[in-house]
Image (cartoon, rainbow over all chains, first blue to last red; front, side, top):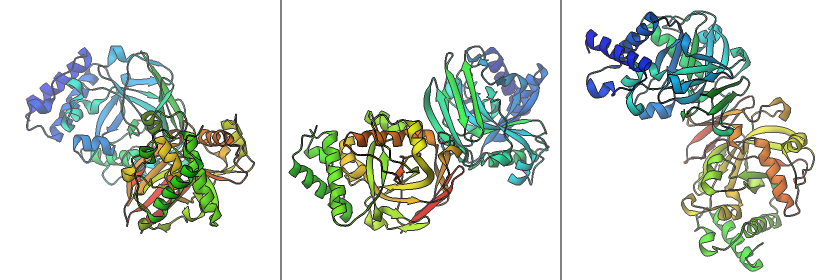
Length: 261
Length: 263
């Protein structure tokens, strides 16, 4: 794709986000769209958000489960940018009916960094040493693409289908928990709907953050101290609507809950 | 109430035990006895247990089955089922399991409770179970339905000793009060690949509810869970088919790991 097409697609997705309408998959309209093109589109989209006053507070990693990778026929994760207006606190009402279009919730682990991580050459040991704490998190993903009809390039271009997220109110040092085996239980409106454990995301959420640091390192982008990194879902996505209440608990870590309005 | 005669119960018990010992699959018994009840099914299971005991086989524990949300919803169940563990079913941690002795084995990650005082229903709840628990340890169950293609209904499974075949207990033990049993995570790996994950809540919302259900169901037959009983609570992960040469390793949050190999 040429520069002009990339900019137009980024603008189109930004408008879809702010005006709340969906668009046809980019992959249906641009046969030659590469994953690199898609990341440039996503950069354009986030640039527009920053121009409008948003502050980047971290990154999210997506497509970390075998099931989703098989569905999209890829063998690597993807990433998007988190902005300050996406985050909600434990127990707060999340206005999905005003802000999102086709929301789905997933439980994951958020990493809060205390040191910069600059790839390539970052190992899991570096990630653990640079992590201040881990926090239970609900991510509510959304797609600007019609009916979630996405290929990998569509979701990358659409900021990794980022929507909103909630952080729990308990932070734990990564030295206090086995991030690969820690269990997760998700409840919706009082029913247990899914369980999982850390290994669901690329074998360990730590692997995901390491992948991101090394991938961004190739483009000279660091993960910065203070950033929030959402490491990828440990359970299947769950469609949600206004009126739903969900909570996620993680063994040894605590829980996060959210009321959708 | 049962609908089968004593003679029918004995015949079916022998039929199913032969299938197990000869590793030959058979048709679902409910195809021939469509009117059999849950009580009939347990009569058959207890008759198999009596047959084994009479030959000198020791019963070394109990197991719970049909404890997952998926199974309960799919089969429309009101409660889980139980079975017993025979001495020859125990495989040491890291040990070999002879695939030829089984029909179509599957492995699933579980937890086991060991009791320190008797639990006598009815009316046993999670609190009673936790108070009566000496310790919890990780266990992997190898299930093997004696029915062709694993095709069964609840009464067939109960009669077939809840598909019990082999089990491996190992890893580290812990006091129940030191564990968050509902959120305890497991990772099941086969041949080095992560194939299933889950957390304790997969078992009836909390693994201790499974033990409570066992105590309450045994009470219906005038039985109890004696002190010192080893009980597997039911699957935390979906059961995974295994073939000869496969090896598995299950990692448990805070409880180490359990492994084994099919030879």
